[in-house]
Length: 250
Ligand SMILES: Nc1ncnc2c1ncn2[C@@H]1O[C@H](COP(=O)(O)OP(=O)(O)OP(=O)(O)O)[C@@H](O)[C@H]1O
Ligand SMILES: [Mg+2]
Image (cartoon, rainbow, N blue to C red; front, side):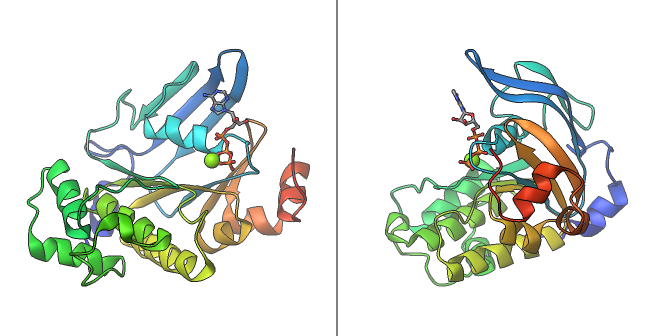
């Protein structure tokens, strides 16, 4: 795997060539008359994973799409290392239900490599597949893979971009415990290699396993942002306390 750790340490946050930190100031998102996110102030810095946590409908996916630059805020600003636009090719996304090309596993990875301006080299395809535990599956039809395998292929395609930031929206929501663990292990390894992970989940266990920092949302508002350890042991707000205790926050 590409090791970005040394690179990131060397350049630090806020230097030319990096999209980090991503800074949201007074961000609202409305759809028609419906307020989906309100008054979000947040900074996402280089380092270990940031997990957006909150109950269903709290605005996690919407916030992730805003941070990814896929939708624009209806008020407020988002900057990437001080710039209004992120650097093309610096980010990769994995969605809850990945779309596979109706082709082989290898062709799916080759497509991602070409899209990233890289050579679709057989050895590199094999390396990326091994990275996600799909070694030797090059010739399988991608759409015939199981849900967990497709999710891992989606991760391989994302890694083919050699992203600085990898965004994941509920990457294990429909997977069984074994596939969930496989995906979490890959995410943890990618994070250790220096790629910034920004992911959503409503799964407290997953947040405990992966998060370095937790951003907790409820009803479209950012309720709490804290180091994971502090969030889980001493939540500062009543909403977070109830969520950590397993009570639904609505
Ligand atoms: N384009 C839209 N138009 C109207 N309402 C929307 C739109 N997009 C999202 N919403 C609503 O905004 C709220 C937040 O949605 P979002 O998908 O961001 O939540 P979430 O925290 O990701 O939920 P889940 O855990 O179920 O994935 C929901 O009530 C949703 O129905
Ligand atoms: Mg969602």
